[in-house]
Length: 108
Image (tube, rainbow, N blue to C red; front, side):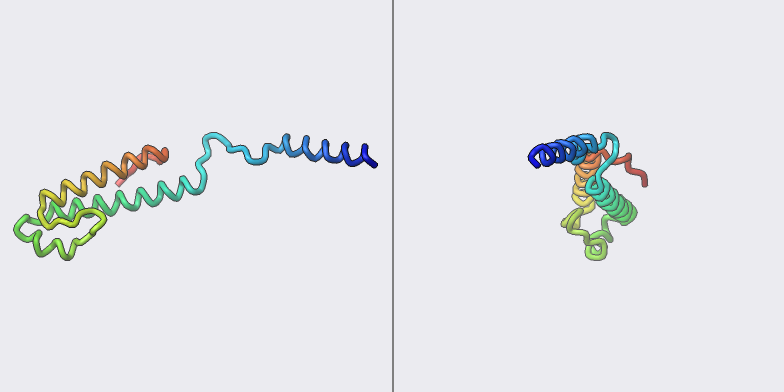
Protein backbone atom coordinates (compact mmCIF):
# COMPACT_ATOMS: atom_id res chain seq x y z
CA UNK A 1 0.00 0.00 0.00
CA UNK A 2 2.82 2.38 0.89
CA UNK A 3 4.67 1.73 -2.35
CA UNK A 4 1.52 2.38 -4.40
CA UNK A 5 0.98 5.73 -2.67
CA UNK A 6 4.63 6.72 -3.06
CA UNK A 7 4.64 5.75 -6.74
CA UNK A 8 1.39 7.64 -7.37
CA UNK A 9 2.69 10.75 -5.60
CA UNK A 10 5.97 10.61 -7.51
CA UNK A 11 4.11 10.22 -10.81
CA UNK A 12 1.81 13.17 -10.11
CA UNK A 13 4.76 15.34 -9.07
CA UNK A 14 6.72 14.35 -12.17
CA UNK A 15 3.78 15.14 -14.45
CA UNK A 16 3.25 18.51 -12.76
CA UNK A 17 6.89 19.41 -13.38
CA UNK A 18 6.61 18.38 -17.03
CA UNK A 19 3.55 20.54 -17.68
CA UNK A 20 5.38 23.68 -16.55
CA UNK A 21 2.50 24.99 -14.46
CA UNK A 22 3.03 28.54 -13.29
CA UNK A 23 5.76 29.40 -15.76
CA UNK A 24 5.41 32.44 -17.96
CA UNK A 25 5.88 32.19 -21.69
CA UNK A 26 8.43 34.74 -22.94
CA UNK A 27 7.32 37.15 -25.64
CA UNK A 28 3.61 37.00 -24.86
CA UNK A 29 2.14 39.96 -23.00
CA UNK A 30 -0.16 39.26 -20.13
CA UNK A 31 -3.74 40.51 -20.25
CA UNK A 32 -3.07 43.12 -17.55
CA UNK A 33 -0.18 44.52 -19.58
CA UNK A 34 -2.39 44.59 -22.67
CA UNK A 35 -5.09 46.44 -20.73
CA UNK A 36 -2.54 48.94 -19.45
CA UNK A 37 -1.36 49.58 -23.01
CA UNK A 38 -4.94 50.11 -24.16
CA UNK A 39 -5.61 52.57 -21.33
CA UNK A 40 -2.38 54.46 -22.01
CA UNK A 41 -3.18 54.72 -25.72
CA UNK A 42 -6.67 56.08 -24.94
CA UNK A 43 -5.19 58.68 -22.61
CA UNK A 44 -2.61 59.62 -25.24
CA UNK A 45 -5.36 60.08 -27.81
CA UNK A 46 -7.35 62.30 -25.43
CA UNK A 47 -4.25 64.34 -24.66
CA UNK A 48 -3.46 64.80 -28.35
CA UNK A 49 -7.03 65.93 -29.04
CA UNK A 50 -6.78 68.39 -26.14
CA UNK A 51 -3.49 69.78 -27.49
CA UNK A 52 -5.00 70.20 -30.97
CA UNK A 53 -8.06 72.02 -29.61
CA UNK A 54 -5.93 74.37 -27.52
CA UNK A 55 -3.59 75.11 -30.42
CA UNK A 56 -6.52 75.90 -32.75
CA UNK A 57 -8.16 78.26 -30.26
CA UNK A 58 -6.82 81.81 -30.01
CA UNK A 59 -5.44 82.90 -26.66
CA UNK A 60 -8.11 85.60 -26.48
CA UNK A 61 -10.97 83.09 -26.73
CA UNK A 62 -9.27 80.37 -24.73
CA UNK A 63 -10.38 81.82 -21.41
CA UNK A 64 -14.03 81.04 -22.26
CA UNK A 65 -13.15 77.89 -24.17
CA UNK A 66 -11.23 76.53 -21.18
CA UNK A 67 -14.57 75.85 -19.52
CA UNK A 68 -15.73 73.85 -22.56
CA UNK A 69 -12.38 72.07 -22.98
CA UNK A 70 -12.09 71.45 -19.29
CA UNK A 71 -10.12 68.30 -18.74
CA UNK A 72 -8.67 68.46 -15.21
CA UNK A 73 -6.50 65.40 -15.84
CA UNK A 74 -4.59 67.31 -18.53
CA UNK A 75 -4.57 70.90 -17.30
CA UNK A 76 -6.43 73.07 -14.79
CA UNK A 77 -5.12 76.36 -16.20
CA UNK A 78 -6.93 78.72 -18.55
CA UNK A 79 -3.70 80.22 -19.90
CA UNK A 80 -2.84 78.82 -23.35
CA UNK A 81 0.89 78.59 -22.67
CA UNK A 82 0.36 76.76 -19.38
CA UNK A 83 -2.28 74.46 -20.86
CA UNK A 84 0.08 73.37 -23.64
CA UNK A 85 2.94 72.95 -21.18
CA UNK A 86 0.79 70.75 -18.89
CA UNK A 87 -0.55 68.71 -21.81
CA UNK A 88 2.92 68.09 -23.26
CA UNK A 89 4.22 67.12 -19.82
CA UNK A 90 1.35 64.62 -19.45
CA UNK A 91 1.98 63.25 -22.94
CA UNK A 92 5.68 62.71 -22.16
CA UNK A 93 4.75 60.88 -18.94
CA UNK A 94 2.27 58.65 -20.79
CA UNK A 95 4.84 57.85 -23.49
CA UNK A 96 7.34 56.90 -20.78
CA UNK A 97 4.73 54.64 -19.15
CA UNK A 98 4.00 53.11 -22.53
CA UNK A 99 7.67 52.32 -23.00
CA UNK A 100 7.87 50.87 -19.48
CA UNK A 101 5.05 48.42 -20.20
CA UNK A 102 6.56 47.55 -23.56
CA UNK A 103 3.54 48.70 -25.54
CA UNK A 104 3.60 49.00 -29.31
CA UNK A 105 4.48 52.48 -30.55
CA UNK A 106 1.61 54.92 -30.24
CA UNK A 107 -0.01 56.00 -33.52
CA UNK A 108 -2.46 58.83 -33.98
